[in-house]
Image 1 (cartoon, rainbow, N blue to C red):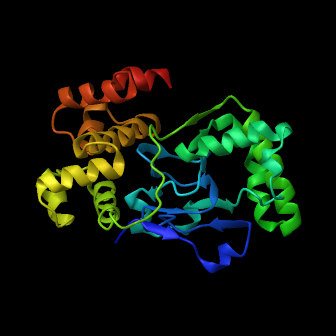
Image 2: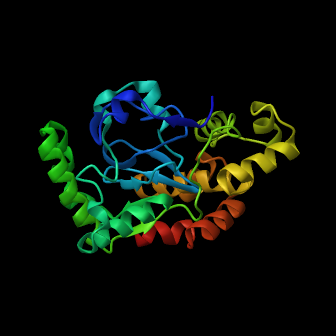
Length: 285
């Protein structure tokens, strides 16, 4: 499995494509494509990877991903076991910069939209209030005619560009032009997201990637802009933050559920990544 450049003919011939997905996983591979993508999670939970960003997602998650930026949304493992399709609903909107007309966003009056599209090379996440205000528009977009879809998306992008309730995700520009040196990253990311609650050693992932540990460390750093240990800690802590909000289990139990054997180390990593102790984080929500 590899980092995939997605460019199906059905999308090449269209400047705008809107799809409602109700199957778990959303995508099977860490991938990128030539279109912009606005992705809205109406139902389901899991973890998303956008560039070097790792974060949990839940209903209300709304993200704009720019062209050639690697990304992956993966549902929690329970979704694959239970196969409950009714628990997943996602709106995926792929579009080109000229979907509403050539050079439209180069006009000064649309400078805010142009800036947002430029920022999307890092991935842009919008706040929950903004997502809630756009919920009906995003859900209904699927059933509109192509002309009305274009008009509605233009309005949605305009509203998104004006909100202050947004932030970029990836700390660096990780846009891809080729997939020649990314043959192994997908299987590694999938393994981490599926097994983060268990012990994962450097030797384990190096073996999965069919590389020596030294070569794997260099490869992983190049592909994700983070060390393997740093990335694994982020996956575990981001999942812990979600459990602290959604579950009433004690902090000590959540510590072990996300793969830590030491509550001291868990607290240290949590504060380093989230900026607060697990207890303070839960109380502040």
